[in-house]
Image 1: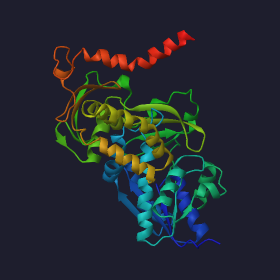
Image 2 (image 1 turned 90 degrees about the horizontal axis):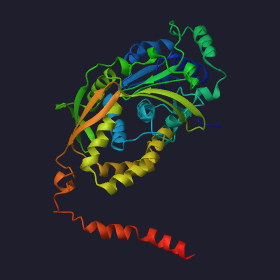
Image 3 (image 1 turned 60 degrees about the vertical axis):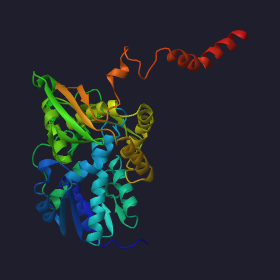
Image 4 (image 1 turned 180 degrees about the vertical axis):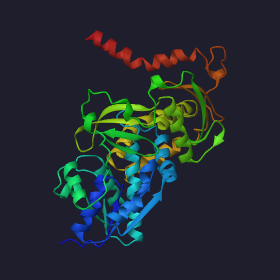
Amino acid sequence: MGKKIEKIVLAYSGGLDTSVILKWLIETYKCPIIAYAADLGQGEEVQGIRDKALNTGAQDVVIEDLREEFVKDFVWPALKANAIYESTYLLGTSLARPLIAKGQVRVAHEMKANAVSHGATGKGNDQVRFELSYMALDPDLKIIAPWRIWDFKGREDLIRYARKHRIPIPVSKRKPYSSDRNLLHISFEGGILEDPWMEPPEDMYVLSVAPEDAPDQPTYVEIQFREGSPVAVDGRSMSPAQLLAYMNELGGRNGIGRVDMVENRYVGMKSRGVYETPGGTILRTAHIAMESITMDREVMHIRDQLIPRYAEMIYYGYWYSPERAMLQALINETQKNVNGIVRLKLYKGNCMVVGRKSESSLYDPDFATFEDEKVYHQMDAEGFIRLNGLRLKIAKLMERSR
C-alpha cells in the first residue's frame, strides 16, 4: 500500500477544472490542499485567485510572479536555439509547464507536502510535461492526475459538481474553445476549432489585430542582442519580461504572429491549435538574422540539425532531462559571438529584416566582392571544384564502362 497522502500542492488557475479539482481533492484525500498559481504573464486571470481558492477550501494559496524567470531561464534559452516544433509552433505552453512544476515542487518542500496535482486531461501533452518535471525534480512526491482517475466525463459533469458545492463558475456564455496564455503566447484549441477546415473567428484573437487592419505605415524597430539574448529595443535596455511584453504589443499592433496548425501530440493523436506569438515571432526572425553575420557556417549547420530534436524534447516535456541540458550547453556555446543589432520592418503581418550590424561580424564586403583578392583567389576555385566533383566524375565513367 502506498504512503498516505498528507498534503497536496495543486497547480491552480481558478478556472472551472482546477476549482472542481480542488474541492474533489479535499473530499477524496481528506487532507489540506495548497493552491499554487504562477504568474507567467496571463494578465487578469491571476486576479481574484487567492479569495476563490480559499473560498473553495484551500488551506493556503501561493501566488508567485515568475514572469522574469520564465523569459530569462526558459524563453531565451529556446530562442538561442531558434526552437520551433514542426516548423510552426514556438512552444509557448511547452516552456511554461516545467516552470510551474518547479514552483509546485519548491512549495511542496517548503510546506511539507508529499503530493502534487495538476488539471491536465488524460488526452493532451500537459500531463506529460507536468509529470516528467515532477519526477525529475523530486521522485518521492506522489502525483495525482484527477482527470485520469475520477468519474467525471466532461464539462457538464464539472458544472453540476460545482453548483452542488457552490463553487463559483463564470456566468458568461462559455467560449466555444479553450485558451492558455503567458508572456510568450496565447493558444486556442478545442470546440469549434476541432474542424480543421473552419477559419478561426476574428473575435477570438487577443494579442493581435488582423493583418488587413494593421497600420498602413510600416513600423521599424531595432533589437540588440548579447550572446544570443535580446537586451534592448531601439537603444533602450529592458529586463527580459519587459522586452518580450513590449515586443508583443508592437507585433500585435502590426498583425504579426498568428499561427493555425495541426500538430502531432506526444500521446499520439493530431490536434488543431491556433496561436498568437507576436513578440516571439519577431525576436526569432531577428535572432536568425543576427546569427547570419556572426556565426560560423559549420557551427550553424551542426546546430541547425539538432534543433528539431531540441524542440521535440521541450514539446514532449523533457525540459529537465540530461539530453536537453547537454544540447543547451552546446547551443549556449554557439551564441558567444551573437552580438549586435538587427533592424526590422513590421508591416501588416510581415516581419522583414532590413539591417544587421555587429562588432563580432564575420561578414566583410571586401572579402565578398569580385574585385578584392586578399583572401580569395578565383583561380583556386578550379581545383576546389575538380576535387569535389571527382566522385561524380568517377561514378559516371564507371557507369559508361559497364
